[in-house]
Length: 358
View 1: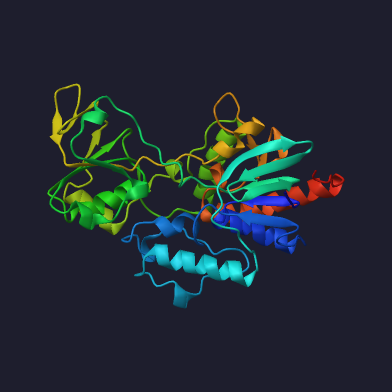
View 2: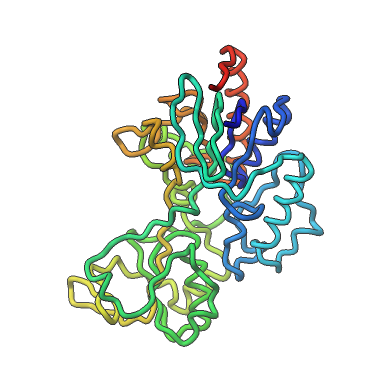
């Protein structure tokens, strides 16, 4: 068994931020802490983004703590799946974080006062855990009557290959978030027809979005996780920014939204009022859920279905810190959460005598 003070699960923005601050606090990689990453290479979920999502289209990408993403490396025309992973790789090397990958964490168990982290690459024993697993591995697929009868293709944002794959097809895009709108605008340029369907009427935001609005949005998400409810993304409470491209699409009718259909048919979708839309593809841009199933043995969930969090600390177990969860799911939030988690973990470990792993 490998024995460390802190295990960091995940090497996206949140995990790397936590590892950086552990380094600064005096914990050594390999002995004081270890970073375990499920992905095959540096970059977190960014390495899986669709090719047409260029770096210039990315909303709110913030530098990791301690090292800027140099302007020369941030070509807005390059795919974000190239720019960000290259930056993360340089970061891991610069701070000698020694990420262990690919490693799949299967369970975190209580083990006589320590945490037993069971993985595909062996077992680690730790005094504390920073969970930074994000959401990419848990795409949310809604279920609707008749879904299994559809003769066309169904795919999720996590599998989105870029607009070229939809040329000449009739496409239904489901979802009112940023990704759904980006997909819709791209696909509308090449598809035979597009239909946009959302559960709630989309809210478009015009004008600047300042610090006050940002703090108000984050506070709404914080309140949910404080109550132990499943977190919403910060984007879900800020509305969609109305860009020039979206204005042009709205003028062409691309953003004419329909309410959620009631049933999926072999040839498309239908509503209870008799309306039907034929389709070759249904693209589910319906978001993701937190990838935290490996924490289930610790029984951290509240009756509301989420993990109650104060700051970054799980209320039911102060050894467990969630970064990139709820209000810290943005890149700037992940940076701050990594620093806050390490501050609390250091205080916790300094106050408690170390207990040797068996």
